[in-house]
Length: 238
Ligand code: ADP
Ligand code: MG
Image (cartoon, rainbow, N blue to C red):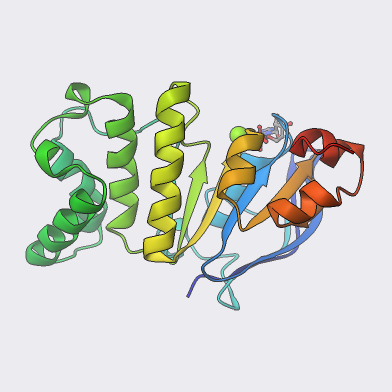
């Protein structure tokens, strides 16, 4: 229940068109990575899917339904940001519970989901701490936990690991991949890191200046990059 389709989607800020007409389908359950240099429109595209920005024209469909005018909270998607955006004065438990409280989910169900997410993310012993008492990796897990408990149709990650040091990044990359294996929920993952793209993705979308240069599996892009830009970005020997 998490197919996402962009149909001739465009986005302009004032006079500047940052996304020219773009078509893309992300299949239910797919791990799709948007990769490309800084400023190419990755975050904008994610925000258009999330509904945090309005599309200028075209349509965003979720499971075939036109969601272009659906407010973010009603799209059933969960965004995980790079800045942890946790509430510093709240415990981990309360941070994770927050979106469920907003959605009016009964307390017992909240507890059940929090315990399951904490177990999945190795946060069980940290539920009563505050974000300031956690490591960077643990804080990022709390942010992911807060997304999991919403049981979204898709997760949208915007460079979630870019604030972590290299060693931690490798571990978190594996954790997110394992999470995808377990949940089998659609994930869209934005990064400018080729290694993340190549190791995590079912499907990679290579972007340049708001346009799709190529879409394919890591192996397809590695073996048959369409042009030098893609080859350079993917690190293919061509
Ligand atoms: P990326 O995430 O790939 O680094 P962005 O999606 O943040 O790229 O930005 C794509 C382009 O859109 C950039 O040229 C950026 O300056 C522009 N842009 C993004 N958000 C806004 C905004 N709110 N107003 C004006 N221009 C924006
Ligand atoms: Mg960005």
